[in-house]
Amino acid sequence: MPPSSLASYVLLTLALVITPGATTAVVVRNTINSGWRLGAATALGAALGNSTHAAAAGIGLALLFQRWPMALVVLRWAGALYLAWLAISSLRRSITTEASLETRLRTDRGRGSNAAFIQGLTVNLLNPPIIVFYLVVVPTFVPAGADLAGFAPLAAIHVTMAFMCHLGWALMFDRLRRFLRRPGPLRALEAGAGAALLYLAVRTALRS
Image 1 (tube, rainbow, N blue to C red):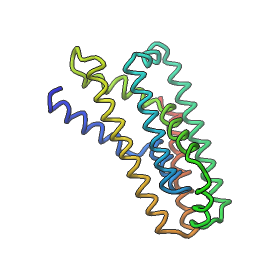
Image 2: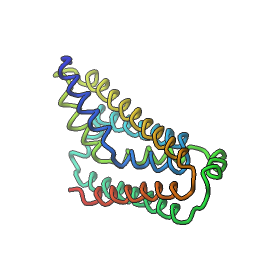
Image 3: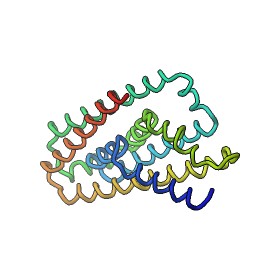
Image 4: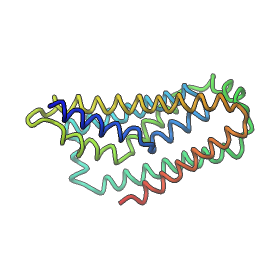
């Protein structure tokens, strides 16, 4: 690939990954609720989701969505419902919880990161724009005749950049969470994350 084309792809990918979306909202939600460890686990699950979509597109499985467009509609509604469920969970917790940061941290020490990992994975697996990215955007940058050898490095760039960006969000909100420390501001942050997730759920459901 010519350096100019690679630079264009990197800039486009950077613009996409730094724009907050559903995955970012879930990473932030879990970080606010449980700290850096669960935020990072969410980011890792999201990276696996991206890798799964990339692998599917690379071997041609994602062409099924081109042949049966209704599958994308079902996926979109499933993603919207999942985001709405996460949003309601956050909003309910922001109303009912009175725990301080220290209490939450003690509670979270005994809690595994599997749930956060699965949430990150599920959100990305149910995210149609990622499928479109790998089906439409990435192939336009693959040199003619390169096939999988040209697709894989581009997919790896996206997966890596998205993962690092999500880790950055987790780090930033973990520090903000520790700075605030009091239950009131933490509840406000969690309510904000829940509201953002609810908005993204509605936007996902109504997207044509």
